[in-house]
Each structure stands twice: as structure tokens, then as C-alpha cells.
Length: 341
Ligand code: ADP
Ligand code: MG
Image (cartoon, rainbow, N blue to C red; front, side):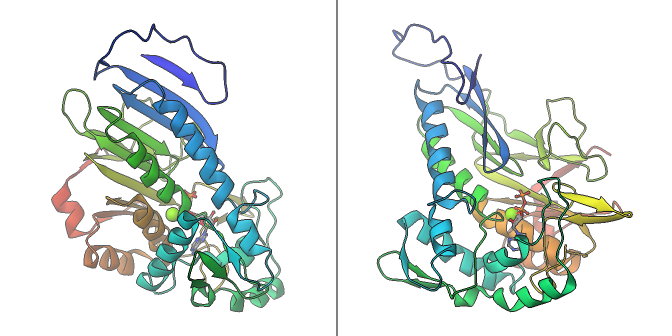
């Protein structure tokens, strides 16, 4: 079992004489991308898989982050209504984001960016918009006005901006899952609130993913999800093979002023942090991207609509209400959730 730090010193590797890798040999790595601690666990991986994963993370960050100068998203946001050509992958993410906007009745909207830009949930300044600023930005939220043309072209009206914070980690989790398949015997990929379990553990068993208790956010795992083997105490556990588990929670990023909690999932209709009854939403899916966008939308929609939307579209979902009540749709009941409360 060797540990490898992204960007750190090259770890000492055993002589590369052995033709076969022990399928139970465990490699772990930790990196920091997309403003999130990324934890990778590989079983029986080939020699270069870990470094290929970090290279992919870097590439996607440079493509999809709105804070990286020259990224596709930055170029779209700074185009002032001009058409820009983007990477085919960016175009595909935007195309899927538009579908998820429709599927969620507008609750998930990447054109929320002018509003998210008015708040600072992570930088420590606790900035928030005045009512005037906020209301003036609301008409700029409309994913239908993001036009995807032929040959990977994108056009966004001047003044509008996009923010892929609610979907990018899911897309990247899917891409890294595809990258590791066939190059290891199993993997547990943790991109903050997005976990992807590839294959099985070396003994053939499922991966157990812990769902965080919103009332006891653990500062060392500010992700909503965790490996159940660490010291934190999850509220419950789901077991998965070849599936992603995604949690969005209102406790993850935000600040409190005069006893009021302001968090990073905004209602596209008010520009304010969602005031629905949900504290967190956890979704199981083959597509981490779908689950990511849906989990964010669930927080906006509230328990009743969220349970219906996920059930109708075939996603096992678990919701934790602000009052601590745990609710599941029928698909999650069938999947099996072990409460540890
Ligand atoms: P996290 O990034 O903490 O895992 P989410 O997946 O729920 O959490 O995404 C929240 C991020 O998505 C916010 O930080 C913001 O960038 C963006 N966002 C906030 N509200 C919305 C919304 N209603 N629709 C789409 N994206 C949103
Ligand atoms: Mg999300």
C-alpha cells in the first residue's frame, strides 16, 4: 500500500519487473482540484494510472473552471455575445446541462452565474448582494438562451454568464471512472460530494459509502460523503458497485450572520440560498453528472418535488430534511440504505 501526493515528490516505486499487478495492491492519492479535496483509491492499478488521473483533473479544471483564465467557460463568459468555439467535451457538458435544466423545471440552471458571483461563500468576505443587485440579475438566468451551434460553437447573450459548479465534478468523476476501467481491479474516486465506485473491492464486495449527518459536518470531510472506514460517523450507508453516489448539502459551503445560514445553492427564481425543507440530497446513478445536477436541483425543489422527480426518472434518492427527518424514494428503499442512527 503506497501513498502518493499530487504535485509532491515522486514516490519510491518498486522495481517494475513484475508483469502482473497484485489485484489487491492498494494505491491512494490526494489532490486539490475544483476547490475540492480529491481522494483516489485504486486496487491493482497499473504504474501510470495515478499520474494520468491527476493530468486529467488538471486538464478539466483548465477547461471548465470559471476562475481559470482562458478556460472554455471563461471565454464564453467574456465573449459579450460573440460566438466562441470550445472543446467538444465542454460542448457536451453544456448540452447535458441544458437537458438537466429542462428536466428539473429550471431548478438546475448553469446561467445562475451572475447571481453566484454576487455572493462569497468560501472566500471569507461573506459578501451578499443588495436586493436591487439581486433582482436586477434574475432576468439573466435562463439556460434556454445559451445556444449550442454546429462544430462546438457556443453563443451566450451579452451580460449572461455560466457556472458549472453544480455539474462539473460529476462530469469529471464519470470521465475518470472511464479512464480507470480496465487499468485496475477496482477504484473508489472521491471528488468532494461526488463519489464513483468502479468495480468491486478486491474481495469482490461492494463499496460502502457513508452519508454525512448534516447536523454534524465533519471539517475533515466537508463533502457529504465519506468512506465508512474513517473515524467520522455517517448517518447511514449505501453499498454500490459501478455506481456514483452524489450528495449536495446546504452545510458544505456558506456562512451565518445573525443566526441566519446563507449557503451556496441558490434558487434561480429568487437568487437567494434555497429555503426549501432540505438539508441534503443523496442520489445514486451510473452518471455522476446527472446525479450532481439532480442533487443540486433537489435542494432547490424541496423534498416533495425532489422525491417525485428522482423516482420518475429512475434514480434512487435519499433526502435529509432540515429537521433531521430522513426520506427515501421507492427506488432507494429497494436499493437498500442502512441507517446508523
Ligand atoms: P458542491 O459543489 O459543494 O459539491 P453542488 O453540486 O450542489 O455542491 O453545486 C453547488 C454549486 O453549483 C454552487 O457552488 C454554484 O457554483 C452552483 N449553483 C448554485 N446554485 C445552483 C443552481 N440552482 N443551479 C445550478 N448550479 C448552481
Ligand atoms: Mg451538484
